[in-house]
Image (cartoon, rainbow, N blue to C red; front, side):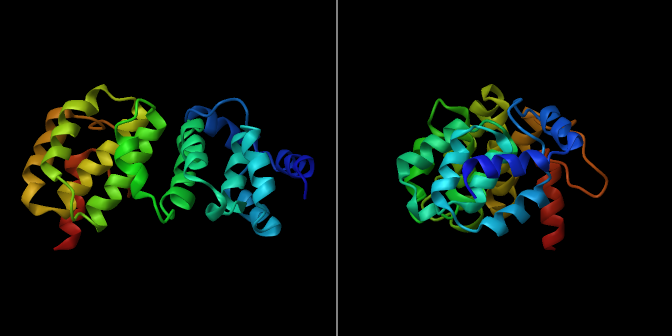
Length: 221
């Protein structure tokens, strides 16, 4: 499929309910509103097509970008291309897809972590803190966790909502995975109060760090 055919197919799959939901969640107007399952099905049909993926990304259409994430070849992306792509996508759903399918799987991803955490770009900072959360949970060796807690306590209240979300994840992961720092992580969560009143569906765990930490620790016992 070429670019025109692919965009036409995406448009034919548009669902107004999905479009409205994405807009409600902060998406820009440049989208069709295609269900995630339909995007995945189309990606399986196309398979890997890196040149087409780059063309789709350049349209800035959200559905096109989510399809691009599934059909690109991450090994063909340079570090500069990855950084530019992370910075260019502000819709959290698409940004998180790119993080999970591309950034998280990139062999040299550690080169991005501290650079992005200290970036003035909210989407780079969001991804940098996501990488840090992964290190906290799975590979904490070499991390200065007290320094991370200091940063979270002092900086998270002032950060953009996009960055707050992954900083909060880092805070929760410290409390969940590192008993020595659990009490302080809980105290910071209570002090900041971020996501204290966040609406949560039945059966889901609140993103409010103290609730999240206690729930996950309780499951470990």
